[in-house]
Length: 150
Image 1 (tube, rainbow, N blue to C red):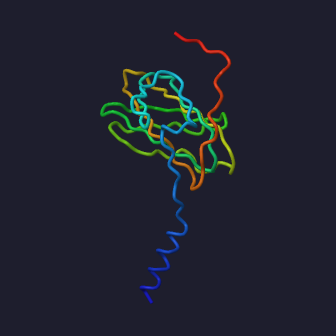
Image 2: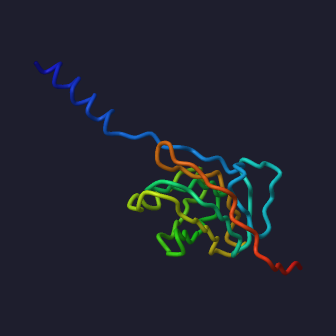
Image 3: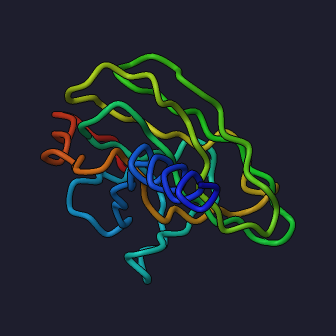
């Protein structure tokens, strides 16, 4: 009957959909480099180009969650395993999740997110990641042996 077909279709769609694992920006697996305003650890804010976020994660897909102020439209380089896999252009005033890739080999991957746009074009806020269902962040990437502070 038509009712059974609808029920089977909905069940099939639900079974095929996989829930994402949300990783908050305050997870200890993130390493932040550059000038960040960490007054809200779940939503670190930043302005300058070159600030970056590093992590290791498991799974086959990656989405990033940014919130930008009302006038900014920032660009971010997204590197996975040292390869540029995408450039995310945010929407001014939006608080949204941006899909980056869903075609990674299953396993552990390194992540490097870098802000490309200058501070005069607006600030950004990092809210975290969305990964495959059951995926996780690994240990915090190691700090470099030498740093230059100014």
